[in-house]
Image (cartoon, rainbow, N blue to C red; front, side):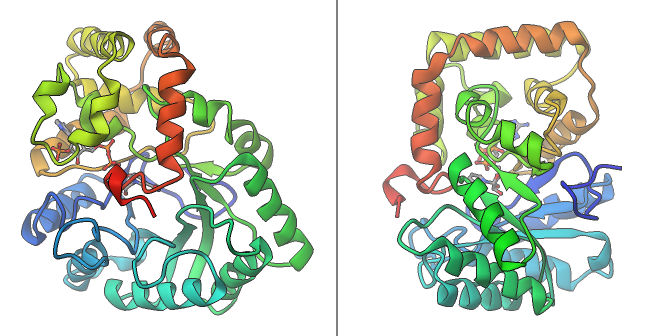
Amino acid sequence: MNFVGASDLDIFPLVLGGNTFGWTSGEEESHEVLSAFVAEGGTMIDTADGYSHWVPGHTGGESELILGSWLAGRDDRDDLVIATKAGSHPEHRGLSARAVKAAAEASLARLGIDTIDLYYAHRDDPAVPLEETVRAFGDLVQSGKVRYIGLSNFSPERVREWLRLSAELGVPRPVALQPHYNLVARSPYEDGVAPLARSEGLGVLPHSALASGFLSGKYRSAADAVGAERAARVSRFFSPAGLAVLDELHRIGSRLGEEPASVALAWLRSRGEVTAPIASARTVVQLTSLLAGARLELNREDVRALNEASAKLGRTQSAGAQSTDTQAEDAPPEDAP
Ligand SMILES: NC(=O)c1ccc[n+]([C@@H]2O[C@H](COP(=O)([O-])OP(=O)(O)OC[C@H]3O[C@@H](n4cnc5c(N)ncnc54)[C@H](OP(=O)(O)O)[C@@H]3O)[C@@H](O)[C@H]2O)c1
């Protein structure tokens, strides 16, 4: 049993990220990845209404449409946990009540489903009174369009405020957080919402669990990443300390006969309050090491070695990770709203 916070969503310990669908993977390849994920026991899929509006010629909603066309060909919708997010679609930006309601309707239509299992506020919107947003998400649960609420990229203060308002207004409270968290971006989460997640019993589903592919070990220098779709995102990790984390992943992986990506995901799973990391795979071949990471258990010594190597990254690099996190972390940096 692996429940998301206080919900009854019992999930496989790896969530498949959907920002690749229609961006770095075409429809057919995305469907293959989705089918392979579910065939191996995967249950939860993460997307957002805005994916992948940053691609020239795209309008947003491409990922949800591809997920929807895959769901339409299956009869196991009720066994799956579909998560999407409001706030980043160019037509429904932000978290006003009007935008959230319209965004949810549009997501349901693209996905071809009646209910979103976990609906996130993609990132905070300080321009809207939080009470308005909390009510809007609560209304969606009360109307049956959403089962549970999640918050992504929110500061601890704003999560606390959301929880307070939910209680005050008598609307369902969030059950999950989706922070940016991985071996090369630790402190924004660990010094941020982690204590609150523990004390409030919130599920934690870290996004970018492979640091946009850096932790797969396929790049050894920023030059290796030139031309990759995620080059802008991985380039910040090629410090001596970042490369030392990779060395540790390779060392542990070769002893265990596992890929660095699998070890990186297993490390996240070893963190007490993490429910399941979210990672994406462009191909079915890449998915193999993600699935292995959902099953691999690291011993205490390996966890300690990774803790020590990643602690050397210090706060400067991690702080950089946080500053883009609150913008459009799953879009190129220049696309920040
Ligand atoms: N809430 C938010 O603000 C937010 C932000 C970011 C992401 N997310 C969610 O988190 C999910 C995952 O994050 P992410 O896509 O940014 O990055 P990630 O999971 O950290 O990295 C995934 C990428 O790494 C590469 N990769 C994966 N397995 C590999 C392997 N075995 N060997 C070599 N390369 C491999 C692939 O990229 P290549 O194309 O380079 O092969 C893949 O798309 C997203 O899909 C999305 O659902 C949410």
